[in-house]
Figure 1: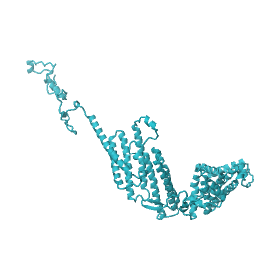
Figure 2: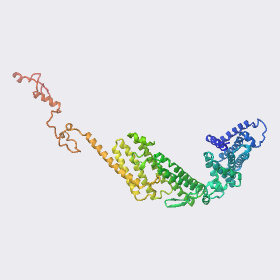
Figure 3: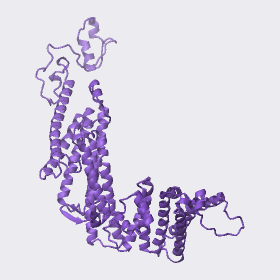
Figure 4: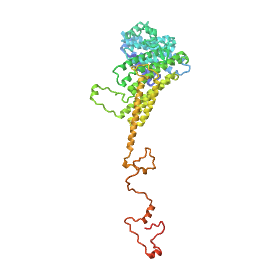
Length: 614
C-alpha cells in the first residue's frame, strides 16, 4: 500500500514549489476527485451527512478508501501547518483561538489516521501486510505526536514520537532507508530531543536510547511485529545501559585538546566521534592495502572520515545553539566545555581535509615533478609492450596548476583554523601553523617555478626556487624543535613529519643549484650569441667614446693594413680645392694676355673669395 511513500512524496512535491497553503489546496482537489471515483461526493445543494470510516472489507476491495483516509488526515495536517506558518512571526507567539484551531485540526488528522490503522490491523479482512500495518501505525503516531506537541503534553508526545522512530528504524532494515531519513532527521529526532528536555531527561542520553525507553513495551502486538523485522532493536546491552548510548559501545566519554581534557555530555557528539574513530580505522586499513594505488582512490577513502567529522562538528554547534537558546551564559562550564570540543572537532575535520589534499597532490606532497601517477590502471603486459611516451610540457604545466590549486585550498584551510575559538591565544600552536603555512607555500612556489622553467624562463624559476628554499628553511627551524606523534604509516593529515620537511629541504637545495646552473648557462649562451667575429669588430680607436664594461679589446686597436675609406669633408673645402688641385682629366687654364693683365680684367674673371671661378 506504500503509505509512507504516498505521504512523503506528496509533501515533498507540493512544498518544493509552494507552501502549506498550496499543499492544502492540492489535497482538497485530490480529496474531491477521490470521492468522485468512490461515488460518495456530496451533490450540489445536497445535505451533508457524516459517513463512518471505511471498513476493512472496503479497503481490501478498493484501495481508494485507503487514499481517502490518508488525504483527509493530510488535509487536516496541512490546514494546521498553514495557520502555524502564518502566525509564526507573531511577537507574542501562537495563542488563543488560533492555537486552539491548530490543535483541533491536528487532532482531527490524528483521529483519522488512527481509524485507518485500526482498520488495517484486521489483516485477514483488509489484506494488509505487517509492513502496511506498521506504516499506518507510525503515521498515526506521527500526527498524534504533533498534536501533543502543540498541547505541550510532553510525556505523550515523547511516547508517540518514540514509537514513530522505532517503527521507521525497524522498517529501514527491509525497505529503502532513505525514505525515512529526512523524516527522522527533520521532524522526529528534534521533537524527541525537545520533549526529553521538557521532561528533564539528561542530555547525555542518545536519541535512540530515549526512544527505546519511551517506547510502549506493553503493546505486545506492536513489540512482536518490531521483533520480526529487527530482533535486536528493542534490546539493550549492559555497556549501553551504563553509558546511555546505543549502537556505540566504544563512544568516547572525554575529548582532549592541547593538554585539556573535557567531558562529553552530549550523546550526539559522542556518537559522531565514535563514528569518526571507526572511519579512521577503516581509512588506515584501506590505505595500507595494496589495492589503493591511484591518488583519486586514496582521496576517495577520506570521504567517510570527512563526513563523520562534519557530523561531529554539526552536533557540537547544535548543542551550543540549544544552550544559547535556553539563555545559558558564555561563562557557564557547559558552554566552555562545548567550545573546547568545537575547536577540537573542527581542527580534526580540517586536518583530514588537508590530508585529502596532500594525497591528491601525489607522493611527497607533490614535491616531485612526476609524482602524480596517471588516472588509469595499466596491466603488466601493456607496461612492458608499450614504450613510455614523452609527455609534452603543456600537460606537465596543467598538472602543476592542479597542484597549485590544492596548495591554495590547503592554505585557506589552515587560515580557517586560526579563526577557531582559543587558537589565537595558543602561541605554540600558532607557531606550528605558521611553519605549516611556510611548508605548503614552499611547495606552491616550487610548482610555479617549475612551470616557469618549462617555458624557458630560467630567471623567474631561480627567483621562485630561492624564495621556496628560504620558506622551507624557516619551517625546518620550527619543526626541528618538536617531535611528531603519529607514525609514518598513518593516514596523512595536517601534521608534517620530519621526513617530509627534510625531503623537501634537500630537494629545494638541489633545485636551487640546478636553477643557478641553468641561468649561468643561458647567460653564457646569450653572450656567445651576441659576440661578433673578429673581422666584423670595430677597432678600438673608433670606439673611444664607449666605456668598455667587459674590458678593452687590445687585440684590435686599429685596422692594419689600413683600408681605403671615405672621409667626410665639408662641401666648401671641396670647392676651393678644385681651383688649386690638378685632378686627372682636368685641362689647365690658359695664361692671360699681357695687355689684359695690366688693363681692365675680362668680364669672365670673377673676384672675391666666393667667386668659385672654374
